[in-house]
Each structure stands twice: as C-alpha cells, then as structure tokens.
Length: 276
Image (cartoon, rainbow, N blue to C red; front, side):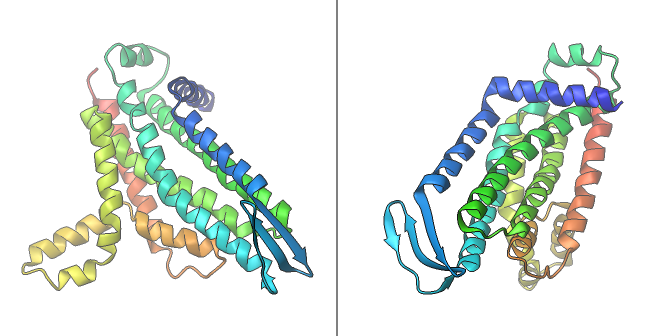
C-alpha cells in the first residue's frame, strides 16, 4: 500500500514540476538565500556585534547581542513564511485535486490497481510532500546561512517547518473537500482565503458576542470557531516556538488538527462514493 501511495506522491510531484508552480516557489526561495549570503555581513567581537553591513551600508552597534538580533530576524522570516508561504501555496496547489477529477483523467486513474482511498490520500500526500520540501529548503537554508555567518545556532527556528506544514495540511484538507464537491480550483481558493481572512476576527469572538442580540448568532459563531482551522492562533504558536518562549495554549493546534482530520475523512468518503 505504501509503495502505491509513494508512486502517487511522485506522480503529483512530476505534475507540479510540469506546471512550474512550485518551481517558482523554489526559485524565489533561492533568491532569498542569495540575498542573505551576499547582502548581510556581520563582524562579531566577544559574542557581540562590532559592525553590521546590510546592502553595502554600515550599521554600527555597541555591544548588541548577536543572538537577539538573529532570533529577531528569524522570527520575522518565520512570520512571513507562515502567512505568505501558506497564501502562495494555497494558490499553487488549488488545482491539483480538481484537475485529478477532470473527465478523461480520473477514469485512467481509477482504472489502475488502486483503491480510491489510496488514490485520494496519495494525491493529498503528494501535495504535502512538495510543500514540506519547499518549506524545509526555505527555513533550513536561511537558518544555515545565518548560523554559519554569525555562529548563532538557534534551533527553535526550525520548529516553524512542521508548524507551517501542519497549518497548510489542515487548510488543504478543507480545500480538498471543496475541490471534491465542486471540482473548481477557484472555489477552493476562495474558501481557503475566506478562512484565512476571518481567522483573526474569530479570535475576538468574545467581544463580538457582546454585540449580538440573539443566541442563535452566538451558537453559529461558536460552531464556526471550533470547526474551522484556527490559522491565526497557529501563527501565534509558531512565533512563540521560534522565539523560544512558552506557548500559552496548545488548544488551537489540537483542535485544528482534529478538525483537519475530520474534514480530510469527509473528503475521502465523498471521493470514494462519487460516481465517475
């Protein structure tokens, strides 16, 4: 079973290479790495910065702790990757499930000696594999460059790799469900972006409750909050981990993961029962 799923993962990988979507992501990441290699020079004396040169401009520091500066830079990168990386990946991966369901394509796939569960989970796993490779290259590359240049090996920065992948996996489970139902990449993208947009607002649900005149709205918002992925709170957990600070609550991660598994199970069930 695992060998069949791995073959589907590789098929998805080759398809994304042909579409050049994730290649563009890889190329932008490489440009970022080159920027950090050539645009940032740091001279350290006794664990403190004596001079920082960015884009050819000297920025002199008086006993500024290098570790704090590097942690600050890495936390900014982690925040950008979490929000921007997921945003771009949603757009890049939106068509992979609907394209699989296109007439002529799906008939060929289901004619193979594969169960529909293997077929669907293989496609889903393929997308996650590509996302993991890209995020690992981006985060791991910047971590290695900054660490070698400064001698500050801040390992908590690497926690952002699994956090970004988990957050994307939860969002992509929702996109997969919408894609199986509608067969439309556009609708999948819109639903995902709506969830991203409303996630920060739902965190303020207690304040919104005070403005509601009916309990019906209260139960509606409460239900939406617990069903949908809590991407904003996952981003806060990611920042706390990167900054090596205590995480106030793991509830958002646990409930979002549970919601993602339920959504993925529903998408798989609909795919298995669908008439092609």
